[in-house]
Length: 195
Ligand code: GTP
Ligand code: MG
Image 1 (tube, rainbow, N blue to C red):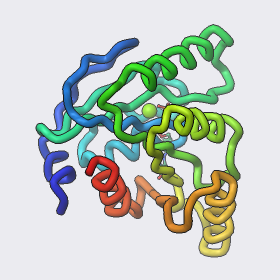
Image 2 (image 1 turned 180 degrees about the vertical axis):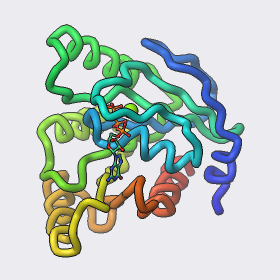
Image 3 (image 1 turned 90 degrees about the vertical axis):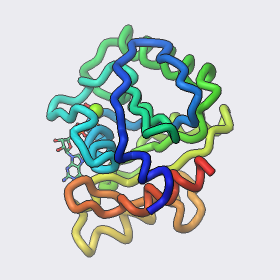
Image 4 (image 1 turned 30 degrees about the vertical axis):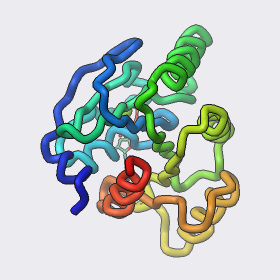
């Protein structure tokens, strides 16, 4: 059990912020991904509580939700992207919010990018990962909903994601909020990036 994971037992919800979340002076990790990818479910699984609100309706979370893990780290749940039914104005607002967040959060140590384990690399995910590269933010890519892949589909689906995002071998974290697969691996990766 690492220090970070132990601190997660004392998770505290700090609040939801439309812009410029408060600076807490702790290393921060942001969670990003397409709408409905399972971001809030993954956070709940990690934090072992109903920490983040999940929904069947994509595009619900339009705020930055901050969680403080004891005195060790901050997790930021960022709004999802790629929800078809949002207006151009909403998309522009999302983009400027993310740009501002990435540029301003000096405590940001890493981003967890959640992608759907059943889908080949999606354009918006590629754009997001490239943007993180531009800002030189270490990235952990997590493939969600792997419980929905059959044994036969699994290896191929995960290899397609690794190849598409040009990830080093073994870097992709297969994850399921249903089975709990990947929880230990993700905590390990998070500990590594937070030093
Ligand atoms: P928004 O905040 O609305 O963008 O979505 P989100 O990325 O936070 O997704 P959320 O966690 O709300 O999950 C979306 C839907 O996917 C819900 O119906 C979840 O129950 C389902 N889901 C999430 N993770 C998993 C998973 O690992 N396996 C399966 N089978 N379903 C999942
Ligand atoms: Mg959510």
